Image (cartoon, rainbow, N blue to C red):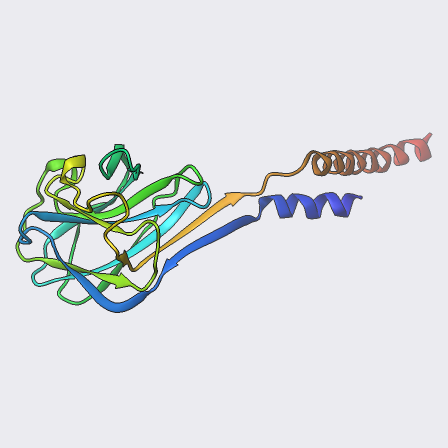
Length: 219
């Protein structure tokens, strides 16, 4: 019983992980960045399968290096309203720079999301309406993945719903090359807790017997 309780404790501490992977097909979506005619942002919409977003990655290149950040927002994909982020940014990366060769950028936000809810992971040169400057325009790697949550683009400030241009929700027809790792700690069943408690009680009782036996022999 003690061994079983220990094994259960180890299994509870293990992490159950889920990965979203939209592999690149080698094609690119272009006109993202400060010199792209106002289209400052590309974002990939995804549905959280688990509660903890451990890390995610997107791939980009540009004609000239320019600064950008990546952000995570809750996403409004309702057919009754315009596409767009909801509320404040849940994660904002440090300022990075694009390169003239395709580069995969990986971020580790370690934030708690709501399973089954849509979010957007975006690259933007104009976070919260503040332009970061630079010249040139960029491109994002595209995926063959057919998803109900494709990429979306924003003109200018990505926090303004009206600036997102995908028409009605989920009509862009493309998905960005995107990968995200999620996890959640296992929650033990009540019966598991009961066996653990009994096991630890047994450990305590055996320790008590070992401690009390020398005293009885001395008497």
